[in-house]
Amino acid sequence: MKIKDLFGTEKPVIGMVHFPPLPGSPLYDDEKGMRYIKERVKNDLISLQEGKIDGLIFCNENDRPYRLEANYMTVASMSAVIGELSEMIKIPFGIDVLWDPSAALSIAKATGAKFIREIITGTYVSDMGLWNTNVGDLYRYKKLIDGKNISIFFNISAEFAYNLDRRPIEEIAKSVAFSSLADVILISGPMTGVAPEVETLKRVKERVDVPVFVNTGVNIKNVSELLKAADGAIVGTSLKKDGITWNPIDKERVIDFMKEVNRIR
Image 1 (spheres, rainbow, N blue to C red):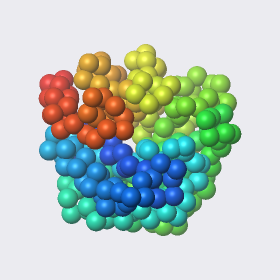
Image 2: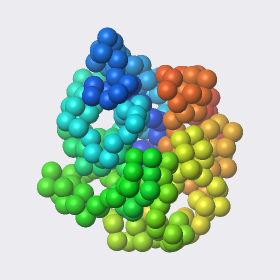
Image 3: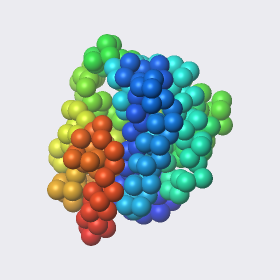
Image 4: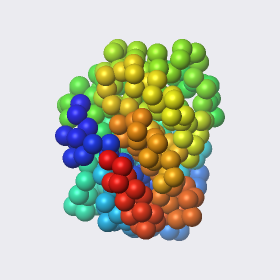
């Protein structure tokens, strides 16, 4: 996959649109309801696009505590909101369902998303319990729903989890790129808002022939260094008001961030 063909630029920056808690999740606000969710997502979408971000990911970030299998309500709610806002979306977008790649593919197919971001391979000890994956079944499901135009972004270093595969991360990346048909490799820090080491990115880049993106912890102070080593970045927390993950997107932060990105690329 050629990144420039998808995003129209080299070293793209993808901003996160975090859904408020959805129906069926413990933090869902019954009084505010779905209308509030739609307005919050709409406002974040506008702020990111007016800030000249290159791409978007819609994610159920606040459906805490997370599950390893999404329920019907998650898929229905996210699809409904994205569908209602579809005419406003002017840039490439992806889907992330924590933590269910088949649900993400379903929403992507229904809404016209260009990619998904998920944990696709490996077995982890995590906050959600023992976390296993099945990349073979996922790709067969992708074939079944005619998802050939949906790219798969592989997060191979899950946050809030410990990979039981003790191979060096660059060896895992090489294996995943070869055997699991990864379109993009994502490298994360140990948790949301924490960046991976630049040397880690460099080691992974040396071993794979697919694009490598930074998945967590990118901010205006470190983006220059990180993008020298990576092919793109996914940004969430640092674009929020006061740099707090659960806050709305701050358009001025997006504008300043993208000015810095455009200066270096």
